[in-house]
Image (cartoon, rainbow, N blue to C red; front, side, top):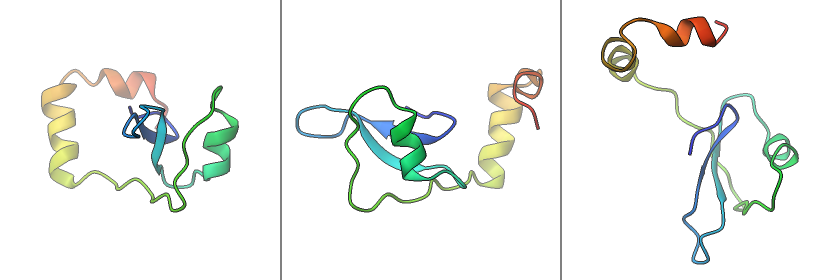
Length: 75
């Protein structure tokens, strides 16, 4: 699951939600504070990688050819 703050998953043995990475500029503490339940936080949380130029092209041309995201997300 990707949010505007981080990437989360259910990859723990007990299927609890885990913090996988934080987006650039977002602190682990901010994600924890804005999550309304206990979150599994590993000792080391990497920063989410940025998409490649090719991934961005595909998102724009294939997933959102009408540019709807640009109207919803301030640039």
